[in-house]
Image (cartoon, rainbow over all chains, first blue to last red; front, side, top):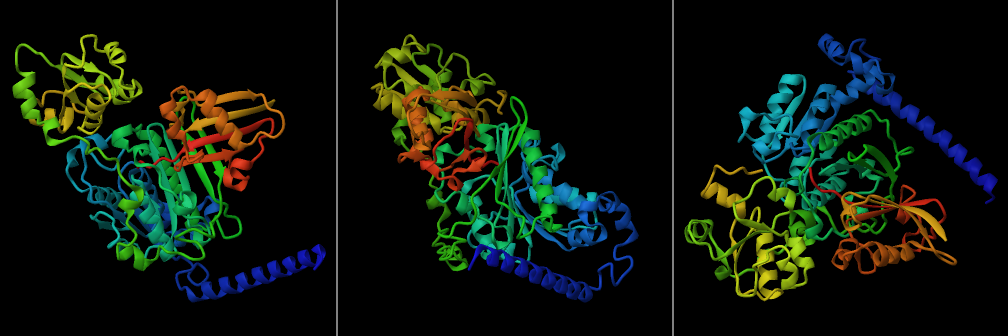
Length: 443
Length: 99
């Protein structure tokens, strides 16, 4: 067939397609009694008043668009740094049903970014706190809470009945699970993430034609490269902005701004420092060999629910279990047999990064981050640049924030530096604060 | 000689002297591919040999890092075999997971 003939055929098909669409549209509008064609005022007066400012934005499609929002059922997984900024905009816009999945409770350290929660409700379930806020914001919205941790066994039951999922979770393990379940149920995912000063945003499995999380990331990252907000830190408004962008994408999907013809896979990257930048990268399409959304999938409802797909195993985890029981002491031991004694003949080494150490630390402590120790390749001379009196016979007590890096450091000091008398403080500086001295600041 | 810009986003700048953007003039005769660029970055721009594994695994970019050629996923452009042209912007970004 010549190129001309092909083009002609495409034109004919396009025409036929648009005719069919029109017909379909007409039948569906006839069938819906709530539509503006059959009912002059399909919304309540209060709803016209409430949503007026967005309905008069032409792009929303006015009343028709508002009814799409009202009929939409959206599931938000995680009511934290991303869920909090996105939820009130979804509820405010009049999305009819919003589900919230989160089994975590509010901690004071969440409040700088998880703005639906407040100081009076520390300890409350995040999903319930969010529901309180949303009910007050917009009583027209039906908010359903799921105070459970999403897993292989409950995900299908929770996702069933929703049109769209927002992935506001915080580990690759859950991100693969959310994507796999959504693909199997044919749901579009608005997916975002952020840490420190940066964020990323994407639409996955768009109407079952777009790429899924596994198309982007067929191989999981190594566990030691994964940083959470509690480890890496995060600036509240940076992750907040990304959460708000999720709400925008969600509204656009519901309003059919994206469709099968114009949707192009993308990844947005927001960087806040030093200058704020927003980039949109053009991404790969759905991969034919994808294990989940490809032509021959091995990740199905059956293999997920049976546990055959093991997300923990797939993503792996850091192995901190590198010290024997004899190589570790409790914070009580440390307090009674080391810290409290007058004449100190041991060295206290804190292996946290210096910007952590600066916030708070014990007196008479040396600070050498575990990364710096590793870079010394076991050279005592290098270590002496930081701790002049150290030698192979020194007794060293190692501490970090939670007692993970200190175990790795203990191993390095014993095996690489050949220092024989090294002990790790189990649970680290924060455990010491909790159990021994609560006057010290925890962050 | 090929003139290009490389960018390290999503925290990857930590292994490149904490600098996010570099404009490079790399001497080369003939085709200079992404594979050649990776070798160059490892040889000339990662000071600490222990940091190489943060960036490279099994001869290619480590899983969890997205490579972009002029703001497009490298998979759309030929991945390691793509021949870099003057003025190209090659970006590497770590995937973020926090939320």
